[in-house]
Length: 256
Length: 323
Image (cartoon, rainbow over all chains, first blue to last red; front, top):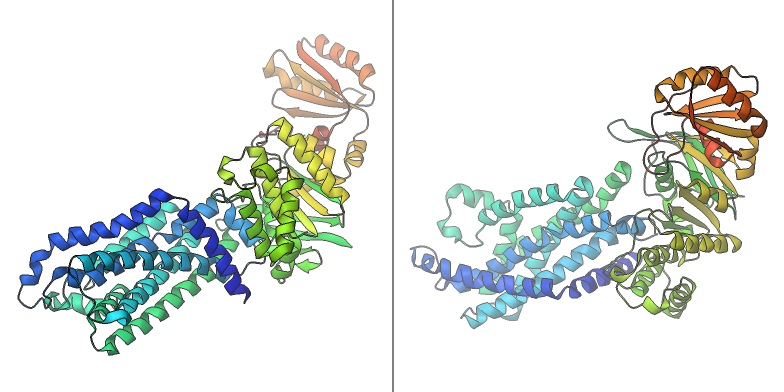
């Protein structure tokens, strides 16, 4: 109970701070729209490659870009925690009885809400450009769920890094190191059918690819068995990352 | 009962830097206690351990009756912590900051709202309550920090360098607050590198230097240990300080001599009588005196005697010649 209440109070603090930065809000709305328009135009012709397996690239891209936005946004969630560390806010919070897990869960929830809002905008723009959610409302929910689970996992990971490294440069470098490769080792912007064999093999172990697969299967209304497996894997991965981040407070305490 | 008991506390950081080399003291319930020392002496580390933010390498500490290592949750419930770096969330308003702090201490509803209003009034922040803390002056932000430490009516309040960086006016406002809090029966542990602040506010204090406590007691006790006066002398020719030290040491009325850089401090029984004799001795040896001053023992002299170097309020104490 206390965990949930603390999480909620800390989440309210973060969301309020976000809403007070209108420029940030506008950028996070415009950015995903730009991704859809830019990638949609740039890769338009790949659908003509034999074996790509999709008729319209926007149709193919919409769930993928939703996941990409989740990944790019959540990966830097730890920067907010670093700002709290620098300003003494984290220490002030840690000296209260607040649940340590809630300090992380509040940030994860904050990242997940942003992710869902952005995914909603992406799907809307894609719809205007002709994409159709063949999976209906459950399909759209699957996109939201996989995007927010991936966002939660990477937010947890990023916060753990922030607590352990306590340096902006390190968090940025580490996340850059992870984000782009895991994007390209997935079927986010390229059909699985056209991947080289080794990338297809590697993508099986890539949480980003789990999210892309679940989102796309849901969006296209495909058989749910693989989607369910991917969502379960993602949920487990998110839990592990959140747990690791919470445990990192112990490391932080020893080092300080 | 003692509100804080600290026994042989040690902290060594990874990499081998020893911040605390065995610190022991106790603070009685309802007392204002100061840890006095320069930056890097170990004051903040001590406070961070007592507030459960940092884990000690060895030793024991109890706050409000609970062990900081094995019962951190119980400790956190009973303490308020006002850190050296302000813990204010600058994007939130004063009221929002106070409300969140109260919520994390599990206050809610009308009781919390009432308490927040009360503190905003008490710390003269009511007019600015609904402005983001970003727009606050340094003094206002500091007052908000203290108010946040008090929202749950703690038993023990930790104030880590409460007036560092404040202008003199804000400092005197803060002193007034501390005195008022002390009257309310709260136990207060404050750290400071201002000698005057410890002298003015604390009922008892400990001087911390290099991770150890070098002297402890009431300000008067500490000053009383140094009998007589202190004569400080600066030579015109700084290169001959050592020579002068030897001469002064040879004088009958001089109880002790301390050198800090180019300044000599001689402890004497009766200042007014000793000064002419000391100056005569130096002059006879051909040592021109550029400056001489006579003072009653202050905390500064206590510090000097205890640590062997003069007090520097900003930064590290200079490496000084020991006796």
